[in-house]
Image (tube, rainbow, N blue to C red; front, top):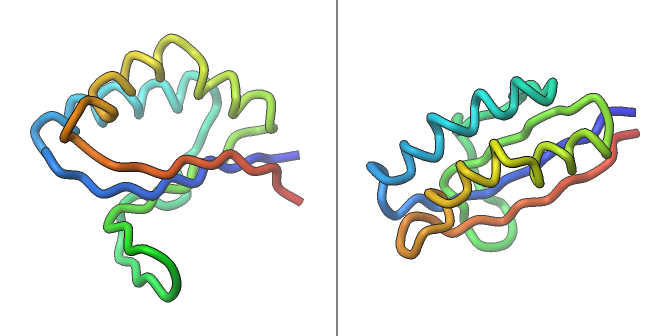
Length: 96
């Protein structure tokens, strides 16, 4: 059963965040992930506005967790989570 990583992001430092983006895409591919939505047009109807939204599909829940916890993605996160670079909500959910 597929699983989805849903990420809501506000980028505060685009140059530093670009370092994250350069590493995260290859990590997604390595674990069999596929981007379904990636920073396209969006409108927030409820809750705090997040300007960048990403949805990634993985073959199953365990693979999505392995991706997030894997060394490739953890390296990328050092750039995204550095002070002042971005604020994020990251959720992994099992599909139907």
